[in-house]
Image (cartoon, rainbow, N blue to C red; front, top):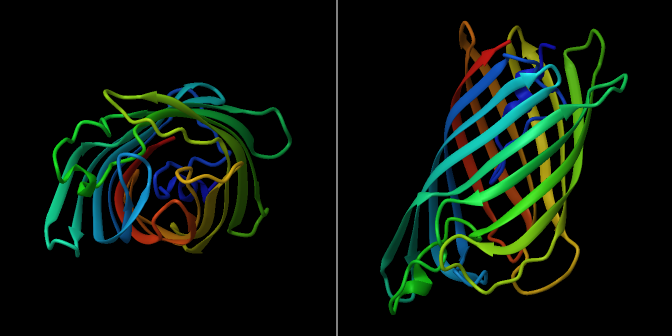
Length: 272
């Protein structure tokens, strides 16, 4: 399917594979860079704090490797450098290191249209309780710091001879209270996760997509985050099996989470 690489573009905080599952020996790999800006951040206790200029720069490696026909492995490895410029005291605070790694498996479903189930485990490569001292509360966090898991159902459709496709995903996110290192005492609630994407080929080999995604918590509290993000992405072939991928996403609705915007750039390799 000509549009398939578009379903591999990254969204904020997560990877997006779509229902098109890879077969044995097939490989997709992407090295990407993203920049996220906001006027708030979440501290080590999970509370949303304002009065800052937040800048997060993430370098990440994402890959999909076909293990068997209709079964592939997904790996996401990020490194984030984040800064808070705090208006109250005029200081800047930096946190840098590993982010939320993800490991998952996706299996094709035996249906007459593209469909798959996916399970992903998130493992933090940092400790939200590691920073101590008087100003510890001002340092940006690279995530919530706890382990969670997500199960997703994904279905799609390619519109015959038209250079157009669409897919949707819905799933359940289990939030645990298991932290890396010292961790924190915050107890996050489970939530519904969803994604919708439409893409089309605007000229030979060049694809444009528009996607929306979100998390809807099942309960309301002071720490469990929910959000909706919307944005376009562009896929441009560079050479045999190599492509340039560009993206922009805006968080248009958020609860216990900063509203901000992200721009991303990546180079991908696709071995069919």
